[in-house]
Image 1 (cartoon, helix red, strand yellow):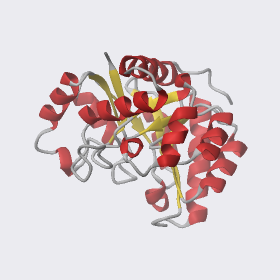
Image 2: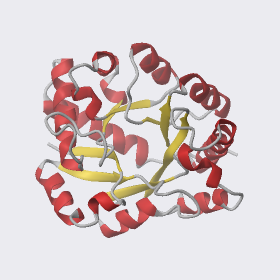
Image 3: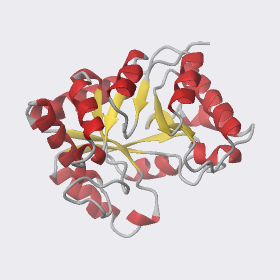
Length: 261
């Protein structure tokens, strides 16, 4: 059985002292590929994920400006992102999107930076990784205007109606530890209805550890618990969920589409 943790933040202080042990535990759990998200602390540093991936042979990276850091983006940010997307280990642009819960950056700035990055991803032929919190309608509006249809709604926390809207746009849904929470019934329903060939799994480590580790530091090995819970909800085997989500990630993130002007 092989799993991919399609979204983890390994560059922070949480893993400073034991990253090698974390990676070894992931391998022991069948997690053979890690995707190190490259938003870091925001511009001008866009290489947080790539530094991790360069150190770990089983890791890939993303690059992008998180909505929290949108007000730190400048005109030099965008060509730097374009250059990073040419690196062999950088497989997606993200996480990008809108976050109206914290409003760390002004909402209009978030929308502008989101749209600029979607245009870069479309031209580079890479998928995008979407972060959306309390901004669902605006997120979909910006996506529809961009014409981008390849990407991932990461740490999906919506119900069936949101799942159907995201799937209708052509996106994959990535489920994290929330799907293991007993009261997350709307997410359970979304995990049941999402076609198996449009589903991914992730940890979002170090955040949102699944049951039975809820409240503790999350790490890539724990994606096994998310995949197991999805299998239970769908009446499938763990091996079926692992095989499908691993194949889905490879098809989406390791195959670039022709660039569109």
